[in-house]
Image 1 (cartoon, rainbow, N blue to C red):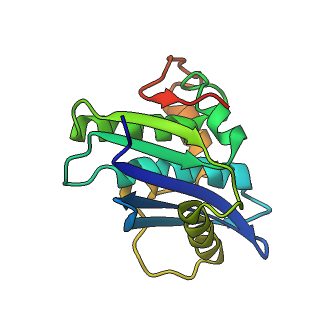
Image 2 (image 1 turned 120 degrees about the vertical axis):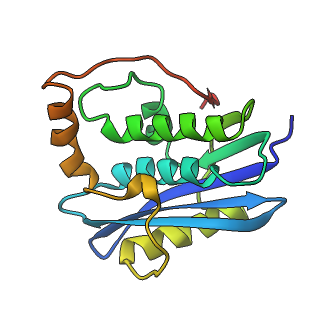
Length: 184
């Protein structure tokens, strides 16, 4: 089955600032963009931004029009591998947030097939180059669109202690996947 919707995500660090972005394409046309400025690189990592970008991608597929299948493109093998782990493991709050957002998207689009694929970066794939530029914009913090709902609230680093407290100091483990992870 050919994916009808493709969403590419990326994280970036520019001049000491970290950000993430996702761009949704339908029929090879850009339809929606989401960006998140995380903050300075002394508090955030590009890996963190890559995972936040995937969550932004999952949020973008919660659209009003029907989606039967979607491909999430990511150029970070580390971020893709992180998606295979157990829910609630230490430091996995961002991965958990991504998985929860995919579950919400699947409720919006019953029967939707979601595939997470590694996309080779910086080799001329137009959609991947586009999201790379959007991630750089997010890192710089120079955009006017509102932050998506799933990414509002405390920055990811602050959320770790809140999530741990909410779980009574322990971390619950659950297995995934709500989607297919393509082999790397």
